[in-house]
Image 1: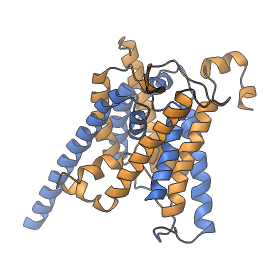
Image 2 (image 1 turned 135 degrees about the horizontal axis):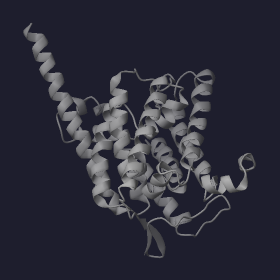
Image 3 (image 1 turned 180 degrees about the horizontal axis):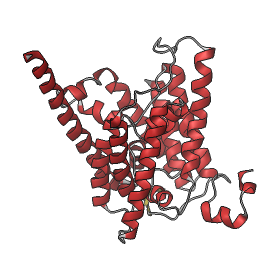
Image 4 (image 1 turned 120 degrees about the horizontal axis):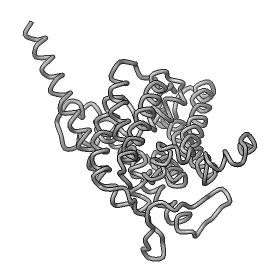
Length: 185
Length: 144
């Protein structure tokens, strides 16, 4: 087991809630991408949806190039929302549990009809400003964490590996600076 | 289309289960408080890696589209670095990326609409700018 590779104290420090929910979730993310790949041959990414969906309302050539894929990208995104909702109705609500799932203490849970939904504590200005930069950066940089990170790295694409290393390092630096400035949450 | 929905369903469930739909958990990784995210990205890339290596050898064409199976290869240029860096600042500030933002909506986090609105604004800004630039370059080339 992975746990035996580390001294217990170090493992506790690196992975305070264990690794199983992360590893299982990651395997499912990969499986979802593979299901689509097997059926269609498409290595799916999540961020092109931002531009392809704009093609419904804008004539700009950058968006119009995605007209042929915009419909399935909407379906993919609705699937992601629905899948996360199924998780919310089951594990997040505590109606289904597993030794592999560790619930968290982040954010706030609220109750709707006996089910637990979740709200972030991260401030809206951080989400909005960060979102703008994510929208610009993922589209200029040819991919996001799913396109480059999951499908690109899975393809052993050098471009994607360089892209992932770039955004990981910059994101770590940014988050550390934001934390050092005392911005929380 | 039903298959893409099912694929998205599994993908989104995985993002919820792994808590990647929670910006706090992503920020905890970036701030070195919980390294679990490495297992999400790594676990997913291992699964796609195996599939992208095996499937093209086992089958000729995708049953639903008739397309041949390829890998996700994109050309490298400095845009990958510039865009990656801009994305990194945004991700580090907000703790959210596109796929996780859609999933976050699914777990009930309506506050994430701020991030989604931002992402559409950002995508529009770069798309507008690059469309205009492409148009002016074409016009300039035509005038020569």
